[in-house]
Length: 249
Image (cartoon, rainbow, N blue to C red; front, top):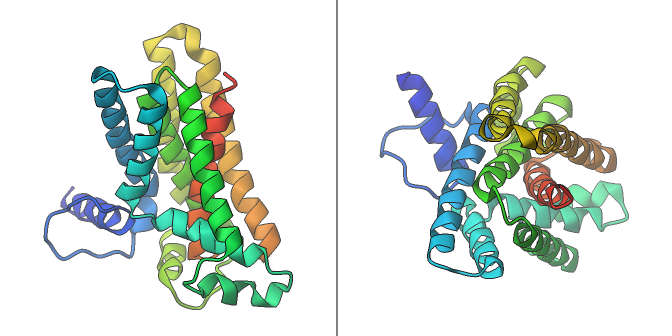
């Protein structure tokens, strides 16, 4: 249990700006904990949204505050990866894409990708007027499970970098199972709370897993593998598309 707590603290410290105890942390296994970190982030955002609701804040403003807080909690880590990935994909020469993605200067396509992601999240959340805390937790969880799929299924394109020890931590498809079971349980809470919402629960499971898988697969098709930046892109686009899907239900 002590080792679990230290590994979880390391994952929280690596993926978020949330405070953790000042102890020596080992970041080698943080990739195993990303779905759980996602649920923690979603839970904090859900509590924030509930507090704003009780204060009478209108839904559009609440959604904007939640999305900005979402970005602040992660320090823009994943959004930065999505921006770099967009800049890389805009280059026609596949040989230069990784070089462009490694450049710290944000290009036009990266800026457009960030605007698109933020607009989709805010507009989708505005349309989702019920069960917002649970949906936020699911979005954050499925986004990070998509990251685990990308780590497990596709090659890592750089010999070094932060993504390299992620690849070493997820050694087999069995490492994807704990996060999947956690997310299945979260969606099952819908049925426990209200049996009439079995359709929504099924949509959350099938839609979340499908978007998580297809986002990583598409980026692998475009680049021939993944980097730390594309892991962030998988998280951001899975979260945004998942929220958009749920507006239909």
